[in-house]
Length: 453
View 1 (cartoon, one colour):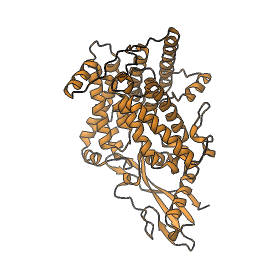
View 2 (cartoon, rainbow, N blue to C red):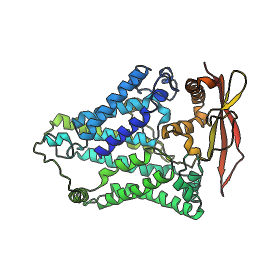
View 3 (cartoon, helix red, strand yellow):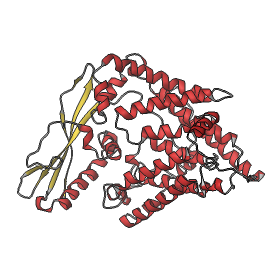
View 4 (cartoon, rainbow, N blue to C red):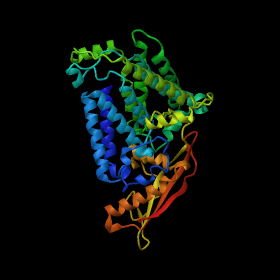
């Protein structure tokens, strides 16, 4: 699990790094002077806001990448885990509007990695024989509760008839052309299959947390839980464009696999574990502090998750939210809940030059085409851009639209100085997905008008 998490961190940094200037510098669409104005909460912090220059962003990304390599190879693993966790918090806080639920899970699994013995094997630390063997029972419980809560609370939050009675949730999910992949196109042709898959997903998610938490000496129930979440997330990854979300969920579930099963896999693959010859005895004070932290975080996490459901009236006290925000222990597992998003559509970039000539900045045509692209999902370079686009479509995030509009026209003029635009009309062509493969009439929404200033 440690190796998988480190590989995810490295992959994520490479994906984000390809848009370093766009998402994490003052030259991009979310400059540092706006960070505290929208979405920022008391206790949030970010090293990435120390400077809005490309050099500073690149330096912090490079440090993040280096300590992720340490985590990958298990060198100074506990220190590497701590640094990766803190740098991940900083990265997430720098731009809140390109995040998805997988980022929350990744951040929390890094926290529990501080207490889990994931440096015990396949690490440079274990080669030196300087890692503790004994498990931390409370940390194990915290890990299991985290994975179980993802599925338990996503079911609790799926309260619409689409999930509970109609069985139309998968149909509406696959109706979203912004995220539907080719395998989703295939399944989308079969209404009965989508209805069966809706109920399969709902009850599978309901079963997973009970399989994880039910006492079982040999761990076979947790193995079944891992197999079910593997099936679930492979299905999501094949049909919907969700970036690293499905991979994060699979990798963070590896810890559910019982040791006897792993031993058999290692034997077949002829993998060798480094023999651990040295035990480190924790002082009672350190053990007491660790256990106290684990108990507090488990309790706080349960309350945070319960406060998201209607039937639980208690909320975390305001005084406690500050440390929660400092360490980014906040979490919300409302994926595709309470119902599926019906609003769908595509963007149109209507440019105008100094003498009034029009230009389509997406298609690079000298006329503006408002028709739907053949594959809407291909409009997005990565899932970070797709998530940003999804947020911009919401009335709660209208402040993102002018920032994005100005960024697009500036980038165009920088890339094509011979076809410079003085104004950009940024449109969203909105349609609402309806039952029986029907949609509303396409509505032409002007999101923003901006110029290159």
